[in-house]
Length: 428
Image 1 (cartoon, rainbow, N blue to C red):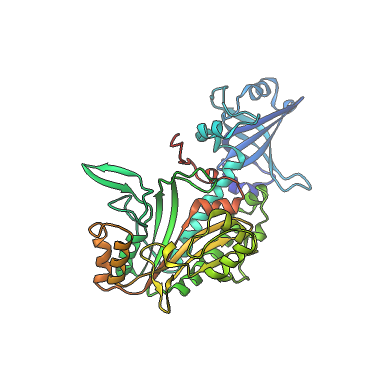
Image 2: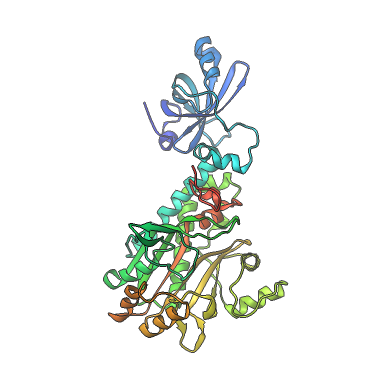
């Protein structure tokens, strides 16, 4: 009976068949052990020479790593063990080359990235990608349950979302276009027809950064809500984070444990997230020995220091207007402050979400566009959103790779996406 790995627990003691690939092999005299990779899981296959015979046993020994196989045998759960193993009765081996480039020896990061199409087959990378998939599904589940509608934003755009020069310029049939940094502005168009929308897709930043936190192409989820103010937006973000973490931990506890993460430490269902004002966070940073002037945004090392002081996610709220995006609404009683927040993850990680209330005022938005030296023509459609029926609204954006990195504990963000794009790499 051909089954899947997910069904295996229901067939303990029975003879079943599984399909997969030889991930690893080792031999101990008259016994061979195959580590079978099937649908992202790894199962041990016990091969006894006495039971299989000389010819079959020799074929298994010759089969190279990454050979596709179909195994038939009895599924057993040895006493005191938590992992099911298969005692082989028969095997079908498909052809594969014997010169698989990734061996047991230690390889450098550049070699592994050059062979990323094969590296993702390894145990650690497979587990990371399973967790990423669970995270993406959790984001969509939360938003759909909350009454959000998915609204896909274009990849080609005529201008920057945040007034930056870190753009990938492309020739669009003789006109200048850019790869999108964010779907947010288009989400803002969607709230007038659907009220609660989100975009989910790739974003592109031409930042010349070579840090463990940066990719030139990443995936972002960006909800936007009409009639929502900045404080309510922070509450929404807290609920969002609690939901997605709980769901991922429930689905991927084994994978998290194998990566050295304690699943229970990743759940904050019964804890409130502190909200610090920018000025309060600035004082903490200064006491930590960092030099920083009021009005500056926190640098990576400062965010990491701040988040090392907390055991839960937390928010920094009301940044100076001068260090926030041009579309952010100022505080009504303090015009020098923006109704904008960042959410930072604990353990020295740093920022995971940026959110805020968008200005509903045509005149103020036009003023900010001019102050930032942006083209009014390029943003006229965005100004129209304020001209025809604008209301208070807020939203936030979270990078899938950054949250995957926090969940898995991996050091470099390049391991959190199937095929990373960095300053010096855009292949395979």
